[in-house]
Image (cartoon, rainbow, N blue to C red; front, side):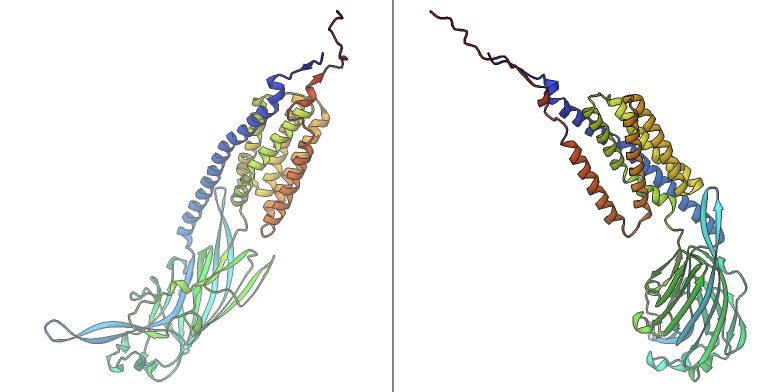
Length: 454
């Protein structure tokens, strides 16, 4: 009679149940990963607070606007009683040409474990004003208060002025004072009361300013000249040219950068002369930001995003070894391995605050790989399996490190790498007896007729 041994429930569904359990553990271990992400963000916020604190005592990011002329005049209006009243108004007049030639001298300051980028700058601002055409805006020259005309230079944070400013107006030296009347161009800065300003009706005037300015992180300019030319150079190797306009020419090397902007009034949408109408000056600012490269917090955050890849691939490897070697691994052991993988990120975050990202990554990965390899040997008692896991984790951590260093090609390189890893997993998964068919046994006893003869 044909007999067949029926497999037990665990023999038939054990692999499926264990795979579901492993998948569940992978999802559970994403919870501590989420806490690590919040920890990285907390440290980033703390870094920003320290930068803001130091910058507030040095000088914040600077925006230099101008110079420009503020020309007051009287406007005649009729009040409710029918009387003619003189109201003081303000005209804004921008230069025909504005040339800025400057150098930035970066400085690194440290507060506790955090690094802050500050700078000093040496700027020469020169240009000229053409005769003002008052008829263009319908103002009578007789209504202009020529004795109150001011040349103004907008500076977003006056604390950054390192030395007293002097103005050369038509070659003559004039002093400058802090502040100027309220204007949309800038909220703070310095100004100089011009002598013999009524000559602006008939002739062009030149100016030159020497400005030594301190700041932090960024130095921007607003293109107030009908033609604005800015040239900057610095020894800082990681600049970011940002704002409304990009440089017409720029060179960046390990020794620093040079950049130049050439901006015409056609592109800025600001008139040369206007009365009290509001103009959107801030939106035209441009300049350079002194970056710190990709700091350790940004790199750590990018590394944490690959946590599910680390945990899932490591668990799948354990699962395949468990099935192929017929050696059971307890779920708690999976959890301990997963926690070791999570501890890697806290090690990376804490050590990188002192050593930088690259050294911290090396230290943390060696510690994590060593711990998991030793634990794997204690589970399976086979050197070959421990060495295989050592090679696997080393390759995985090396692969992720390369991805973190890349910027433009990270997506392409990562997609290809993940495709190869998936192909390897699919190849080895075909060797697993998912339904336990190999454990079924069939009797080889020949069939006999047990019916006796009559």
